Amino acid sequence: MIDFVRIPEVKMKILKREKKFRDNLENFTESKIRFNDEVEIECEDPLKLLRIKMVIQSFGRGFDFETAMNMLDEEYYLETVEIVEYSGKSRNRMLTLKGRVIGTNGKTKKLIENFTETKLAIYGKTICIIGRWDRVVIAKKSIEMLLSGRLHTTVYRFLEKQRR
Image (cartoon, rainbow, N blue to C red; front, top):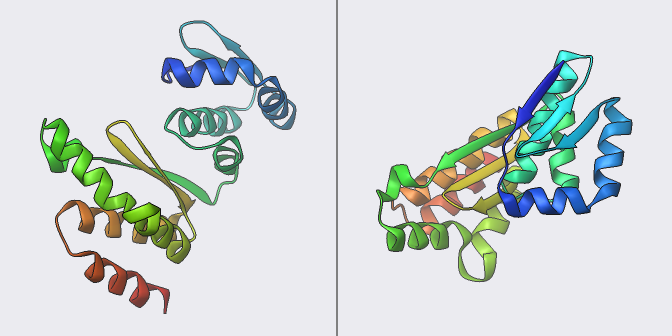
């Protein structure tokens, strides 16, 4: 089976350049990856093909190679939150909302990641979360709270409560 994935040009260049990552992915999944305008994936097993596609999408969404490789595990899930749904078309508002999720010196982002045992990637117009399903749901809820304008302390208390 063959499938295609579109990722940003910047990420495509990195993927082409990082032969080690590509080789590891191909060897581990018994697949073949080629590049045209899109990333072309060839694999016999349709479930593996879907997982490989999710790994490449995760990388394209701003995760590093190691975090993206977690998508090969069936317990891991990728969730995307569209910032545009909370900001409208305003570029300034979108930057403000991204800043709310990141926090001062990355404090809020780190807290969400640590409390929920997930990884966040804030890239372009989206915030993506990788982790186990039950943990991703909590992380998404906390991000949506921040994007909706809730106070950071309210979100921190929510995370603290979920941790217990």
